[in-house]
Length: 474
Ligand SMILES: Cc1ncc(COP(=O)(O)O)c(C=O)c1O
Image: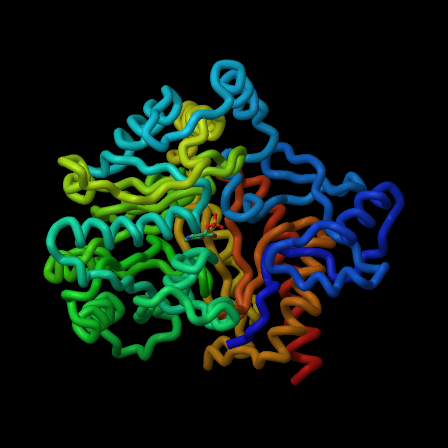
């Protein structure tokens, strides 16, 4: 596995700094610490920090006025698209009433109303909402809640969490324990104890004779190995982002649900990406028809117009904390921030009024067909995903599924694709934390025009990548 951490949204690799962005360029280079970024690349005066100044619909504009199709919804989060001023207006109205009050022992109308609305949208008895400020905090909270739940129900030794190889669940120390990407984990070891990883659902790389529910059964093996009396929870995304949009096999989540029930292990559905329309449903688990004990969510909850996350817990999980002195001793100052709640309410209004889940369900076949049409390129090995969340796996040899060496992947993604796609006006994600992939997750309002634009940029760029890296290199 390649160990570079800086793959991500496509970004320039060598644009000369043009007129107009001068001051901001200098200030960015001098003062801004960008996340997961090889900042050394910007020591070269010829390399510009990409500065995005404006957004509208599916498009964003940089400081030079260049337009980009935001094929990644920023970071899988601007679900309703850019420039929706009504979300900011809702936050401003809330600021006039009550800019902030805490949810530590107090409540306020926006958090109450949003909690009730989320509970009404979530399936089954997922009726209790604990607000946080982002995805890592949501994962951190869900794991702590799983431990606390078991302790409160007489199983204090149940503390471990099982997740999957290559899965990304966040960067804070607990969430990082669930994250299954060694290059992100190793620099910060020792991590929170109690993490264990099992196979993911990447059947493209399975032996052909493997049973379709093999990966689900691998979770039971992990629970049995650890000892069911020590395992608190299993955390899984409906479609796994890390490694490139691994979809579940038919019946996978039903089998995992049975396994969790058999061993009294809580099932956490990590929907930081997969909720709020991304898979064509408000909650990702609806797409695959399973009932988790908790959902972790963030990003699209506000379409990223305000930083917010949540854990949606079942009545069963909340029940022990509703009696006597039992307390979930956990919280964050900004959890349930009124302005973020107002933003989330306005966002859900847009999702509902503009029928964006339905739109994704109606259009995803067309989106998929466009990506599938790229399979005639020799570099395209696999196309996978669901809803508006898809990945293309790049291979050296389609027949043998041979992948790229570390050096080749470096040249392919960082040396060429990332900068070239951005230069041609497409923001998407190039990544090689598993096998090299290009990932697309456009705003939910994207339609045929955007699909055609994506293809018009991807096709020649991938063809050129093959020529440069495979033909010339080989
Ligand atoms: C599935 C999943 N969980 C957790 C996180 C962490 O979210 P955040 O970056 O908001 O902390 C992410 C971020 O991409 C994610 O995709």
